[in-house]
Amino acid sequence: MLNKKIKMQKSIETKQVADVVFEANKYKSQVYLKSGESKFNLKSLMGVFALKMEPNMEVLIETDGEDEQDALSQMVTIFE
Image 1 (tube, rainbow, N blue to C red):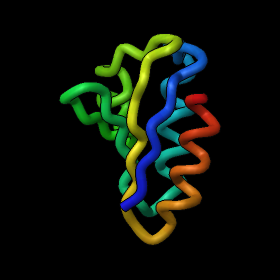
Image 2: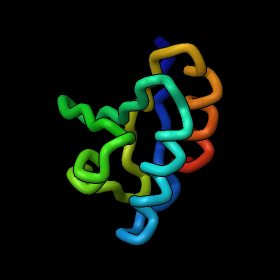
Image 3: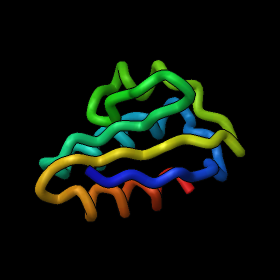
Image 4: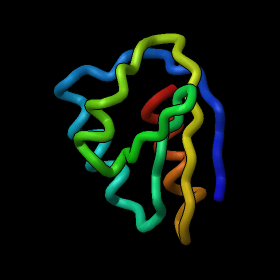
């Protein structure tokens, strides 16, 4: 399991949510985003919609699986 804490540089618009889910689903690893006590599955549209992402918000991206490093790198690129 890998994780990285980041500060989001931009908010994710509604039209971009599908792109986030599409990218996360390219990987076999589990891909989550944690904010406070909440954990959101980035492979789920409902999971991404449930998170109110705003600029300067600190989050933890967590990946677990055989391609976790690649998945983590891609998610960091999307959110930073």
